[in-house]
Length: 301
Image (cartoon, rainbow, N blue to C red; front, side, top):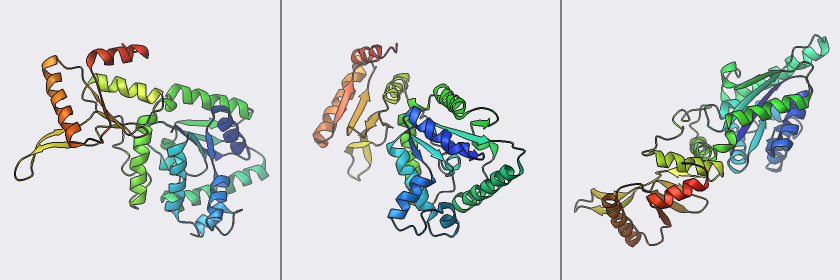
């Protein structure tokens, strides 16, 4: 679920750089060609003129966002010239790259200018923004005498330094929230994402556990729901249980405890009650000693 977005303001190197980066990093390339092929199979009229079809409003902008999002939910992706820097702005597990060049050749300058105008109109149509300003980018690379391999090296180094491949859990959770916003047709490029950050864990042990899950790219949710254990005659909640983590790929709830034995006994009682009321619930309790051994296996003390 790591995401690299590339906005190409060069004459011709952007596609080559994106293709090489996707092959080297093992990421799926999502570009106008992929979207054109997919949307053409769904009824797009002109496969060869994706931007034009969007500007003519022959393609629903929400549908474009949904296709890009579905790709990002299931793969590590490189998104080229599709406004990913806007769609995934402020999202954890992302890096946004801008490629540009200054060329004195009149014909090439004209081509670059035309390309910028097309992209600007696309951004306006899909995201309602005049253009992608500098604050949307983490890395801006000027193409001069550098070959494409050199630029790919720089992108790869930025990915390693930012550690975007180690944030699968929080990235997946943010993407899920973004999908719900898109599905309800309430999105305005990054509405609702400012609050999607690394959660405030109740205990350091939970943060350590999340690090392990992220390292192995295991999707997780932090305290996603509470289970009713006891209510009064009016139906008001008197007791409930909120597991620390939910791993959707395994349909498994995880509860961590580093508490004193007196409090562990209380938690065990709650857990027994939980299993009585929800016999099909899959939940695992990690005790203090077992949890320390677990962390030591991954070099965390």
